[in-house]
Length: 86
Image (cartoon, rainbow, N blue to C red; front, side):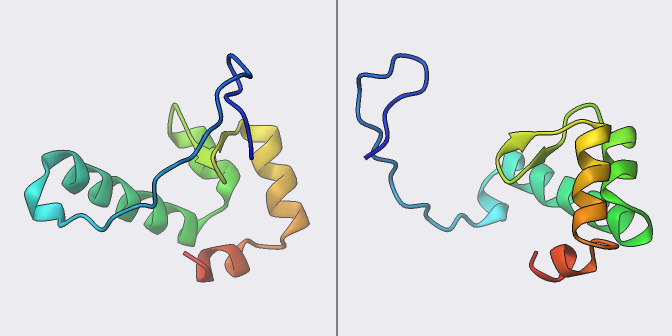
């Protein structure tokens, strides 16, 4: 069991994610559009280019900068194996 990173005392028991119909939420629609734009950019270039283009990029739940994006790209080749998993 993990604990809250801020306070360290409360147990964290996240609820399972539930599917959401994007037609029911403008926020989900915006996220779908943003994901499409990022996917198109990443398919044409690299993760580092995505980070240079947008103010805030998360990768596996962590915010990353350009140097970390370049490290990830170097470690995983051109990133095609990562894109295939999306």
